[in-house]
Length: 325
Ligand code: ATP
Image 1 (cartoon, rainbow, N blue to C red):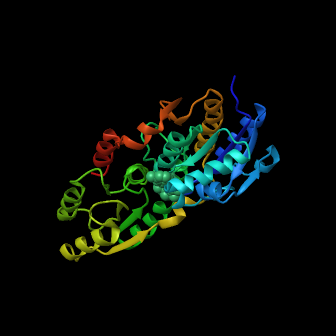
Image 2 (image 1 turned 45 degrees about the vertical axis):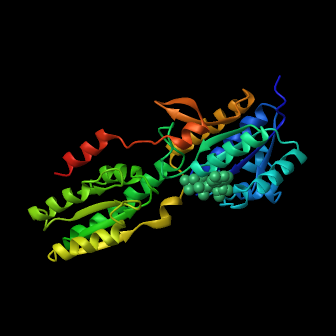
Image 3 (image 1 turned 180 degrees about the horizontal axis):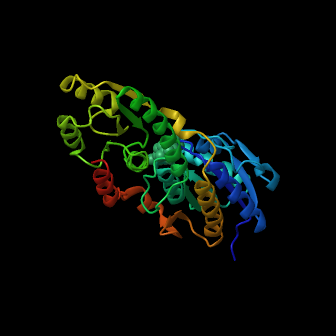
């Protein structure tokens, strides 16, 4: 018999479109199963500062289509200390919470894992980050929406690039990983994609420029923010030095990639993962992330999701290069 009667939910780290859909799914699945739900505002900070609010079915109405997060998110240094986590635990005990769903990235799951080890409180994670950089799940909530946002923006840049025969360096988000850059680059028909996982991309870019054959057409180079070459500005400056004849412009897409209404794909993913997270808590899971692999729901221990490295799809890299020739 599970002692689970009341669960809490929070969003933490960087926000991602679809987090609201996940909050809704967790809340409604829990209520359906006779559980009470407490929303914790501002991530782990809210746990420490008692920013608790009960969530009922109507509280999560009309949010599935909204970006951002109803519960707000934050980065909380105090939760990284033992004292901070002790206060958080006492606060949860005080209100009778026996399980927590955390929505976030690897930092959020690192905190959850430590918290579970120290206090034996069950925590289940839902991957919510636009970067898609978590091991153990093919997709994270927000990634698909961010991709579509980037592609829409690059399509517009392409129009003006073509009109002036210009080359554009477009910097996209993705933290240390190139998932957004690679997929958006393919979808937008980029001439080159520069990502941290591949070291010879700049050489290939140089070859493309040397050939000169694209000089009159528009050129789009997608650069992942985490690239070792130093981002779009550094890379563009290097190219300008060597190829002064190219008319070069730079666009850093920035935070617009985090906002907007979640795509249908992200809404469905968030709904499936939210439902699965509550089931996992009811099944006495204590320290794991719910994920999607080959379109099936899976449970991945936090230990693995945090430590193991997710690789970019080599087939996509090959496709990107072939199609840019
Ligand atoms: P994103 O990938 O979008 O940045 P994230 O979950 O990785 O999301 P972080 O800022 O790394 O974002 O982590 C979110 C929060 O998780 C931190 O502010 C902190 O409260 C908690 N956290 C991170 N690392 C630890 C840790 N080692 N110990 C305890 N708590 C941690």
